[in-house]
Image (cartoon, rainbow, N blue to C red; front, side, top):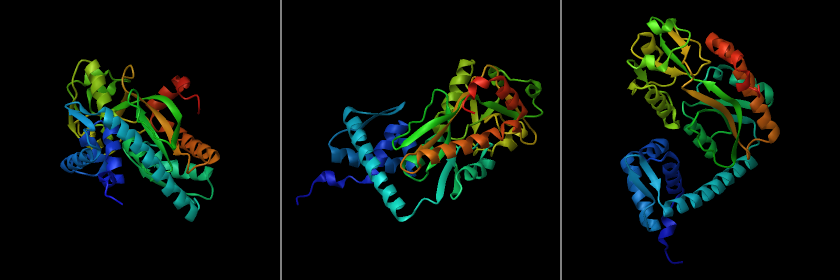
Length: 324
């Protein structure tokens, strides 16, 4: 058999191409796959040499696929879907499903998710992986590392889900609140105009690659200022900075205020998100998926009272949680 340069393409190359297409950036794709940007660029050039043309046009705004790039990405997704499905079939054939690999964004209800979902799926041990980013959860689902996930998506910044992953909305709309020092003069207000925070330093939202940071910047610009995003802290890791008055941050509305902080709604809801339950159809039956959904719904409802400000909003907006 004569050697064909096309055969030099490997699965990791296909995953890389798809990651660049989905993130719109070589830098973000490199971070997603755990590579350095130079290594990613070198690999991309190698792939472009193999396929005989440029796959992406790079600019200040990111990386956009060329016509050839779109064709290669479409084929790559088909191949990866088949390969992932094959490995799932092999795994399931050798090991009956006794464990549910569950993922979740960092919300207050993670404290009871394992118990509530476990009650709905007796006989299955529930493991939990908490990620700040919906993009990371979508990746883990696509690659078969998770069976199901509770995902938060900022309004206007949907995260694409690829087959065999499907989803169902849990909460179609909820506001994002702001945390600030309890000693801050604005903490006395029942709700805070975003424009009143123009002089503050901000802690970057966790999982910025899923649109949360872009959404913050867009909302602040609409309020007439550019946010000074000075700090980067893991989810839940910035409350000491907030308590000390060094900065403010956006927070999930179900989180109770941490010591020394106050959590308030933003006037007019300039920041909002929705909660989605996503799962792999090749891992969960319709009945099992419904059980996971019920467990997550019960867990979420159990934490509505954790923040009195959110309970007031929840009761005043029954139209935003019809499914519960």
